[in-house]
Amino acid sequence: MPCEVCVTDAEPEITVSLKNCDCLIDDEENSSNGGVSKIAELKLENYATGEATNISKIDGKPFTIVKVVDSDYEGQDGIVQGIRIETKESFDIEGNSFNKFYTTRTVIVSKFFNKEKVPSALTTAILAGGELKVKTISKQSSKGRSYFDFEQA
Image 1: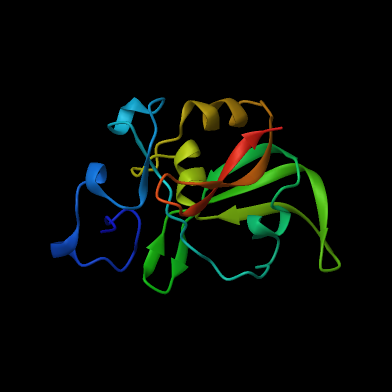
Image 2 (image 1 turned 90 degrees about the vertical axis):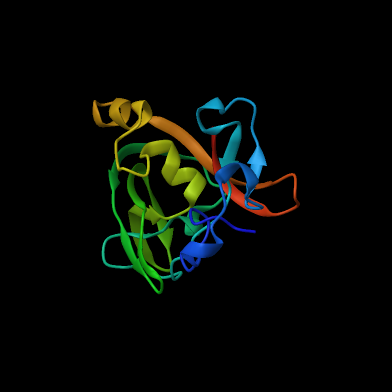
């Protein structure tokens, strides 16, 4: 059964604790939330919106994050927590050059901001002038579901 963190249309009476959610994987390194990590991916349309486009357009390509900001999005089920990142590199996507990308991928967003929108140490370091070279990769949970995460490049 999915928890309210994993799906935006969950009925309040059906929510379960994070520890019992089907949308979670065991993660011994992440003890702050009981040894589990969120893997649910919230989706946005796959099109560019002004100066930014969906991060899925550069999946698998290495890039350097130089700025990250909290940026919620209006989804079909209401407001969805997301981030907008700026990269050092520019990417040609459908004839346009982009260096700003958005995502609501839960695992990725949680690396930069918690549910209360407090920036993580990683976000603070990037905003203080640091750079983080990563690429987006697909992983499999112990339950066989695919999810996306960052891997240092």
